[in-house]
Image (cartoon, rainbow, N blue to C red):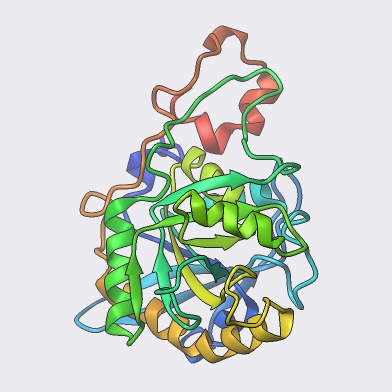
Length: 302
């Protein structure tokens, strides 16, 4: 009998997923990648995934899966992204660890535009986004005290350092609803909370990655000082895009360095077994429709 696709037996090889901007997918190493269109029980992903195999010096090539978070041509607002469909699609394609590449605003003087931050905590200021695979007859609660996967985040951090980035290790990322940028009052409020950076996409992405039992880390590219810094211009799309364009090559190099550093097996780099004891609903009360909808999330436990 074949192993369930979400079970540890079926997820022994590390497969890297990357979600981010369109510039990441123009990597020369992805020239032979294939486009994959998927459907999910939770809607349509942002667009086609790109599956590829990236070379690794002295080791077997690594399978990688890329997705443009906002769709091809950047058509989706942060609120319009179907995060559930995106994460479910990564799980369908065998991803075990997901790197989120995101543009963020800096809330700290020392985090200069152009620097890279690897946050280890989040504050959720989103309002209207579906943030769980559960509900509709199935109640489950996963642990989220550490919203990123420490060992995976450390590998990504070290890879970015080798790629030449000026990095900041740790920090709190405020995730706001958008699409407008912050008011000055909000920006100063987040600074008073001790937050380091602000963005619009890491949540509910990280929560859903945890429910899908994917390792998760954020490579956050600081593009501006939000609007709190009196000596700097207020954040604008023009400034953000200019910094992102400058840093695309750095992000690409960081991904290649991470690919080279990742181990072959999930025994060496475990993903979170977050759903193993998370379900509160009596198994006998879970309907066939719910079992089918959640098969890739819970099926190996049910």
